[in-house]
Length: 181
Image (spheres, rainbow, N blue to C red):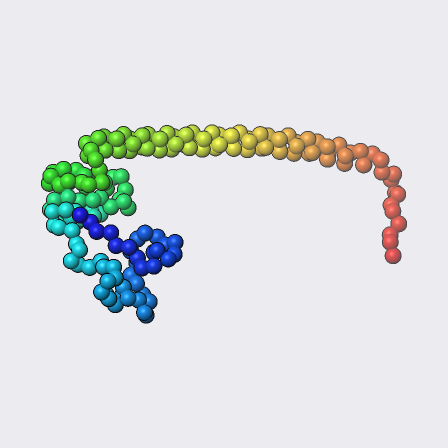
């Protein structure tokens, strides 16, 4: 049976119902005076039968080698690493406390991994297609611009030749503009 320890001054003030060590200079509870509440100490510890088994938090294969009965997989592990460690734990017949059904978890997580891979491949192919399309559109645009430039150049060359002839026709022989001072 686990004993509950209440903090000092709980009847006088609205305080939480959990234990906190008394720190006051004049505190009778801190000084272990007779007639006051008991403080938690080593003697109140639960029996070995009731305590949790020795559990090791596993983050890699080396930690798994040191485990004897049961393990807990670290929450910081990725899915691939978890699958590896679960496989090794199954081979060494260790109990994994934070995974209820190992086989079901492995099956679901493999499906998730396959789904991720297929989505990634799909994104890559879509990206390649869009890139190729953009390159083709850019080439078509360049060709159109070049054609327009060549049309403009030929048209401007014809216009300049015509303009020169018209100017020559308009000029009066022997007439020049006066020079500026």
